[in-house]
Amino acid sequence: MTSHNVLYDPSIFPSPTQFMPERWLEASAPNKERLDKYFVAFGKGTRMCQGMDFAYAELYLTLTTLLRRFEFQLYETTYERDVKVVRDNFIGEALPESLGVRVRIVSELE
Image (cartoon, rainbow, N blue to C red; front, side):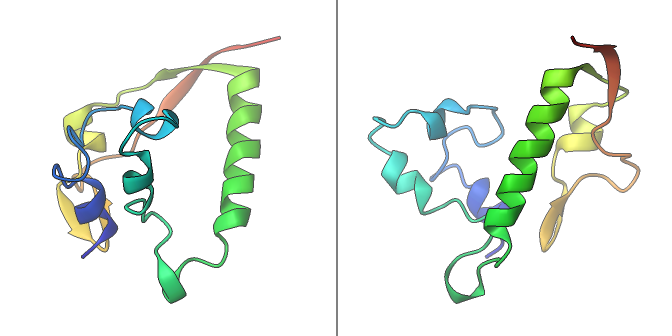
């Protein structure tokens, strides 16, 4: 079973295609502990990614730097073509003609 199958399973994550960060953020939610075991982006067990902590650190540093410095706007991006997973080749992939989720810098924040 791939991570895409787990993360998009409606019996585990109700409305799996909806952006609902509160499902992870609400520490008092009755199903938070149950959901944590299904977060498999880095694998689980003995085959788990060894660079997971480093990857998280880099993500936090990079994203916070960019988001504090610039204002972004989506650029020629549609859900159906660029975001929706239509095939599973170990990782979920969008349509072959997709150029990916692209953004444009609208302004530099001070």
